[in-house]
Length: 351
Ligand code: NCD
Ligand code: ZN
Image (cartoon, rainbow, N blue to C red; front, side):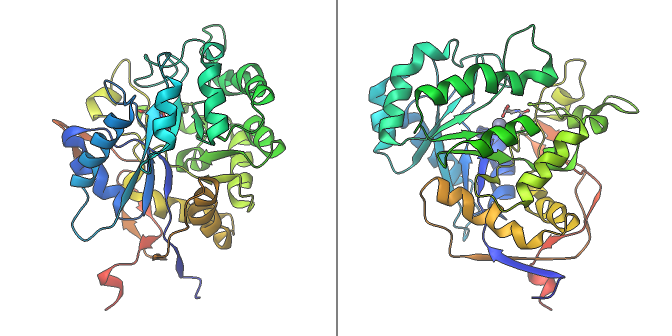
């Protein structure tokens, strides 16, 4: 393999927001271009709370997959205070639903229906542990007294550690981790606890968000942290530990909602996510670790077969678009109008 071309088993995105309706025409092709499967977040308005709703949403996503592309959405249920053990059993028996997503109420975009007190849901979590259905966690405290930069660490100490002490074999993915505390915590747990890492938390820190002016397109939750945490994430992602795998948390919002006096949280990375991860691993001198992180460890954790198809990337510069249509607005992607050094091999490379 030349160092200018990288061929890997096709990756999957283990944390993704597609949205719904007209947005799918933009978001689904962007992900399906690079990824074979994606764990699709259920934080629609209203949220996806039942297996029946998840299957209907899956069908809407499939209708937006370009013809000839074999992309498969993997569905999740949104954990509310009303979630029942009966629905957990249905989910566990359903091939299309892979997990349940836990948002502390009020933690992030469309999380107002999230869990208000996790201890009251313990009977449901107990059934998930028994059935081996993964719990995907947005790990941030929602205590108004907790500083936004400390919310992940406080959540781990006050909620996640007690949860795992009570349910030691519960399969948990701590989503989009942002701190060295989260890296260490996950490393110390047994194999049933893993974490996803986004391209933006690998590429940026809070200076990118705040120095020289506030940059709304860098605002996401959990918020970007200081550079020491960024470095801990880079080491975790490129270190070959199967507990850490790819999850973009690509989360499109209209430009008007981002460039706003109360701009909303979410970074749209899908149009170049795989290329950006490749760039990051390349800069770390760890291209040989990309395939495990992107294509093997997530599938292994979810007990799904690894993909058979392959994808190639080449060291070819290209410019990310300024924006893409999204409903009646546009969405500004991560790295808009910037040069990206790796490109997915396509017909133009084969001449
Ligand atoms: C996500 C969104 O917009 O749905 N936003 C974000 O900043 N990551 C929600 C989430 O995953 O927290
Ligand atoms: Zn998310």
